[in-house]
Image (tube, rainbow, N blue to C red; front, side, top):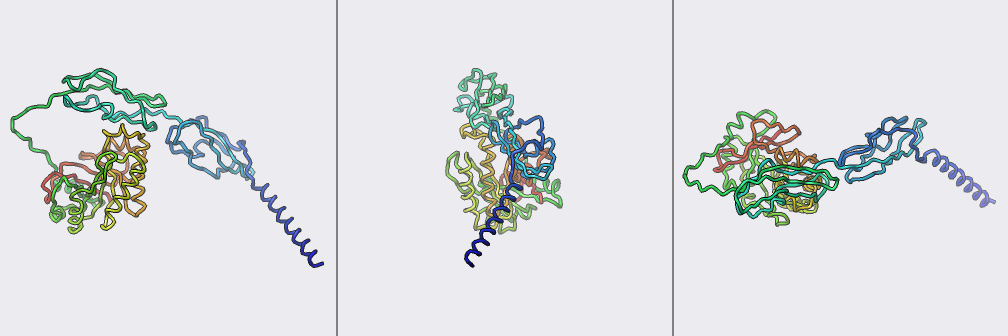
Length: 399
């Protein structure tokens, strides 16, 4: 009898549990329903635009629950799904499609004239940077006749076209010249910028003035550098010996970092890269981390990529190049170091436009008009400071 009563009790409990589960299911199930919202008229977006579901909703009677980012990293039609509460506070699933397009012209890094020495062994179509925001291999052609073995001026056009038929045409004059044999023996005195002048004009309560150095500065007396008023130094750790090449430590790196630290200067480092893939960038970052782990690094680790003449052969889009830099900096940042991307004003605006890392700006001018954020400004490359025999870059670091 007791066994029979126990079975009845268990059956009742199971029935109640099943009944409650069914109630929960029907009350909380998500039903496809587009009736609770309206969409904006334009559902066409540009590749790499940063958008969320709500950017496409015109009106909604309830509230969006899953306002996720929309994947705009590839072209074509994309189906977007999201969950929302309707006016009756019921969960509903909305669906709509957007079209991702590329309307941006390729970038051709070229002015109205381009000069080369006669008999130069150069492939202009490969050397002149031709890049697209989306395509890794846009069509890049020089239209017109020219001869690099004959001096003269040639009127040409550089035509770049991507897979979406966006086209950029740059008309330019190719000047093939004979090197001058001027033997006057008179050397021009180089124009320099004194460190004292920079201190006087730019030192504020919220910044610091310093320099960046490499093997090209030779032997440095960092005590004199410190006494001259510098508070920090960015030191080149090393570089890559060309695309696909080995990583080479700067021949003065250890001497420079030990001397700078011993003199009480804050220290950051930078690496000159030819990385052509995310994998290569990650590998370089780990190499850099291995070299600096025994030192106290006070300032950011900078990624310095300037091999624009080699870009055409790398099969990278501009977005892909930005991903390369981001991978290097992300890998370093994971280990607790500050990071920044080095670049000139024009390249930051045109090439590094997808970057959201801290920026080390190179702009050789008295007052920069770069209109985005930056944490360090390299304001000249012809600096003179006590303790260094050669010219040196001078920087302003913002606290």
